[in-house]
Image 1 (cartoon, chains in turn brown, orange):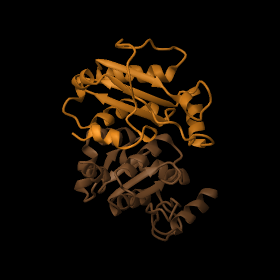
Image 2: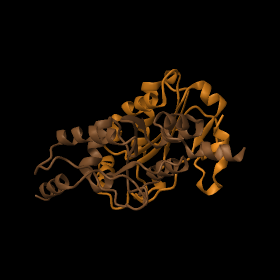
Image 3: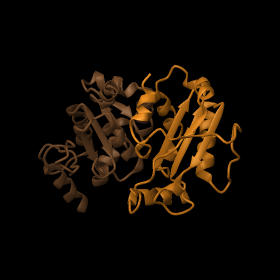
Image 4: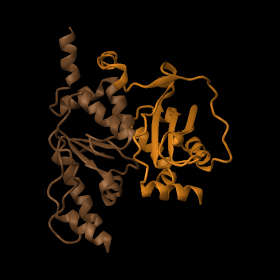
Length: 156
Length: 150
């Protein structure tokens, strides 16, 4: 019964959240306004969610308050590069989302990072991309100038 | 290229390039029979990836789970099977090998997947970031821990 109510409440929520300083609530996905949402609907919604924003992160907690060291590492890396405007989904708020995104990505752990609708990887991969310079290049492809490039210019 | 600059940009407290040099170079650490999950991880990765070097670290004690848990692991796999593969492809190979553990008792898996050449030029194990308590009171983690004990 409770899961029924939760499903209904989830379906009636409005759009996915975008992380911004003024909006700390990491609200989760939205579905078309129908009473029951199936796993198939969630997969379909995830397909839209990962494409809706250039950078999408599924994490534990929120960027303002991460609840996991690995999720926090992703947030910190993005912050270092000056990426502040991204969609962050808190899987701890929604167990269906938590499992659903693992099925969708075929990836067993959280956090999960998407660039332009394409799955990039988790914390380890993002960290290595940050360390070897690939992240700056990937952000450039998204039309995002890494803050570290600006910092490098200023130091010269 | 950029890596040196990236590391210097921020103060030490926010540095994310956490590494420590290896204290030893034994190809395989002795498995602990009282740790079945660790043993299973070691066996499966050895069989599927034929690694030149393999390290399996149980990091559960660093997280908000009961002592003796086998829920959080860090693995370092050095294998020529990773040659020519992108990071994500390498990680998917590791995930695939440990599919059963990841869908049952293992809650978190940190992966380093290197080719023998990469390992030779940088033989270091990365360090996991500090826990932020997300597993505390997380009923799915409790279920996984139960699954591991059964």
